[in-house]
Image (cartoon, rainbow, N blue to C red; front, side, top):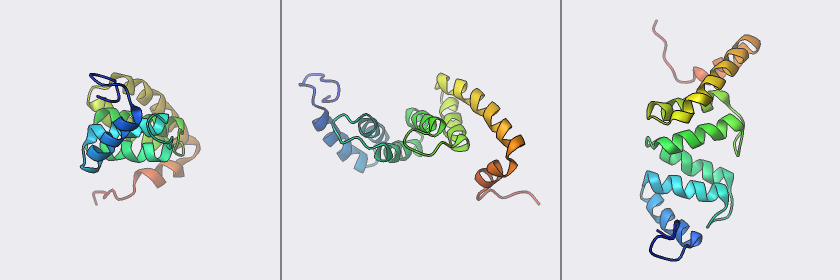
Length: 136
């Protein structure tokens, strides 16, 4: 309501305060919206890491837009170290929930990761196998 100015005067700081309350209660949409406010510096002091944290909290709950946004952050290295493996993971989850533009990034990342595999084979091994059990 305060974010968009629907029925009230637009007030980003007030919107951030309400999103924060809901985010603390585990609301994924509020976590995503608060993360976006941190990311853009609207209604809250700009903080890419805080934005990433909020996106991550919403993403692990299955919120597709947060998965997509988190994937883009890792893809572009915006606020986090660039990491094609993390980017692929989050964008793939978003694509499974019909976020169509995620597929475009996935195609680019798949090609990039193939190049990494052939030119730096240890890179994917160090990211991809952590905690995964193999059939013996």
